[in-house]
Every structure is written in structure tokens, then in C-alpha cells.
Length: 318
View (cartoon, rainbow, N blue to C red):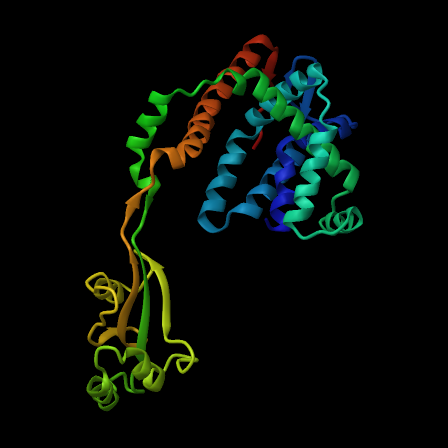
């Protein structure tokens, strides 16, 4: 996990800190129960959301996600406030959970000590105490979501089997093959290196592929290693792959042209495409189904919180 990504991940519940810091009189965009949502609250929330997106996306996808955040910012902020309010009612003790999370973050990022972690955070402009408090808030919200939503989700075997049948491609392991090769560069004018090709063809006989390849192949270190590599279907140059899939073990092809040169390939290993058995992917399916259902039920839960709360939008945030 990259440092900037795990730093961005803490922003799940950063908004409650922004709320507490808004002390000056300013424009109010909405009122939720007895609390006002100000321009400062929303601007800070927007910056944190964008920072998260920038750590995970780029290009057109980033632009689209940023536009969506802008459109839904006020609504998302209101939803967060409602969840935060419920979290405060529960008074969850999450200190042990957060310590475990921090140790895992240090492990994944090769950070040896808390002091090193504090320095890394400081370089990102983040104070360790506030960062730790944010993780506590995130963990409290996860506990709330589990209590109110996740614990009520039940996954049975018919659901698992239906998901498995509808998502066979998701659990299909593509064909995989390993190749040796003899490689020749194209001439400077792009033409075939015909003399070398004829020489190799004359020497190449069954059982002699490795010997001829080490002698003539122009791949780096060919004298020590003639392997082109191991590939899944779809990963290799189309011309090479088509030829490879026609070979039997230890057979070799004729000359194959690619953009960067000419190859003779030898098939050394091959495994057929196969669908993983349901027993091997059962837990993955359960997690996928749980994730899908939790998203739906969480929306329902938030909708109920909205019905039970006083919410007045005074101005759209643009």
C-alpha cells in the first residue's frame, strides 16, 4: 500500500473535525437537527474528498469523480453528520482496534517505529494525534454500520450458487503457458535478417532448441537464459500467442514476425483455462454479496435517519 493512499484512506470521517473548528460567523448552507453546516465545513470536506480521489485516480476518471463529488457534496456531508451523531450515541471503545490498524499500516509501509510514522505523516502535513483520532472515528462508524446494517445481512447457499453461476467469468483462470524462444532483430531498414534465419533453420532440429537458441538468439543473456517467460492468455503479442496455443509441449514454431523482431518459440508448459470450484471461491462470493447488500441497506438506513431528523437546505453548494 503506498503511503499517500493509506493517508488518504483516513478521510472517511474527517468531517467531524472540520465541524468543530468552524468558529467564525459565516454563510450557512444547511441545518441538520440543531447544527449548522457552513461554507468552511463544506470546503474542508471537499478538499479531503478530492485528496482521496487524487491518491487513487487520474486522468478522465479523476475528473469525472471530482465532478460527482462536487454535485453530491452537501448531501454526502449531511449523511456523514447523521452517522456521526449516531456514532456518538453508541460510545464504542475502539482503542485496541485502532492500535491493530496502525501496526498493520506500519508493516505494509515498512515503517519501523511510531516515530518514523509520525515523521511520514508530518511530511504530508498531518499531525499524528489528529490522524489517530480520525482512525478511531472511522472504526466507530464501521462498528455502527455493522450493528445497524451488516449484522442483519444473511447469505444463504442458494444466493451463493446463483452468484457463482452468473459470474463464471469472474472465477475463470485463463490458460497459461511458458515459452522458450530464439529472437532476431530486424535489419536497420526493417527487412528480414534472412541469412541468420536460414542459418538457424538449418541447425534447428528436435532436441537441439536450447543449444541453437543459446548460440544465436539476440535476446539479452540468451547464452544463459532462453526463456521468453510465462504468460496468461491475452498477455502476449497476438501473433506469438496464436502460434503458442497451436503447439504441443516441447514443439517449436516457424518464424513469427512482431513489431520488434522475429521469433521462433518453443512451448515448455501449458495449463488449460479452468473455472475455480465453488468451494474455493465461497468466501469471496460471500464477501461480494455482503458488500452489495450492505450498500443497499446502508442507503435505506441513512434514508431512515433523514426521515427522523430535521434537515433544511438553505443554499446549494457550488
